[in-house]
Length: 93
Length: 227
View 1 (cartoon, each protein chain N blue to C red):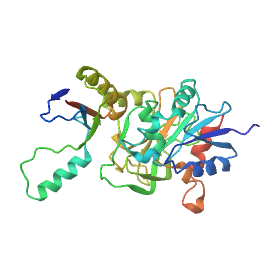
View 2: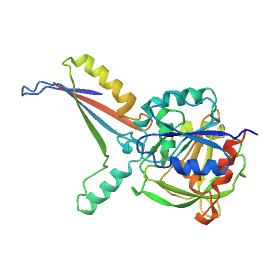
View 3: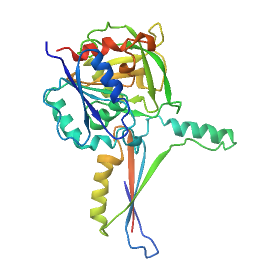
View 4: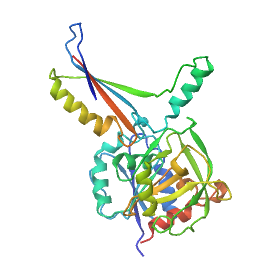
């Protein structure tokens, strides 16, 4: 899944933000512990908590199409372990 | 008889390579440690061990960065040609990341680093690794890991069972399966379909002397070095 976000400021570099999280159906022990902690603080209005990580890449290119392709390849090869993880990519231009 | 040669890989952050040398030399093997920049596995290797530790500081995911070290191409070729490979702890994580073993290892369910002696049960001995152990035998082997929570999907698990790839399971002293870290069906060790690549979270190389708590590692490692 991709989102393209256009920035209002004139930062030169395009960024790709990769969010990696455990697949649905794969138990997320950190999310579960955090869910319990939030409940015990009185935040009862939560269906579930999932914890992932965010990897921010500053790119040396300004071409959205090639960035999408390249960052997808990076995600599949290294950034996510697709046996247990899903990912999505945001391109910030 | 020629001594078996055991090659032990070393990444930045590996810390069990010398325990592994000790264990295999005790069993009469010749050992050599090779640095991860090496692009070759010595041709006379009878076994390659990916030892425990924290390769690349466990950054990103345990084993995720080590799997792209130069030596892993040679390791994959060695395994694809039928060479025997054993991954212990972080080595198991590296082998799953490489795709040489099925599944993946997640953070322990209780989020703790678990370090203790643990009883494990032999599920299948129809392979080189556990051929000196009995099915159902309970072994006392130390564990020390934060990411040992084995995950594999139901479909693959069923195939692995059919092929005899589930090797070891966490259990109590009587052999009843027991919860340790959240692993699917309490799995502690597996092998690939061809039964030449083995991985386990417990550390048999730390269970080589009875005075140190257990010598049950001896029969495990003896199995894997026999011709």
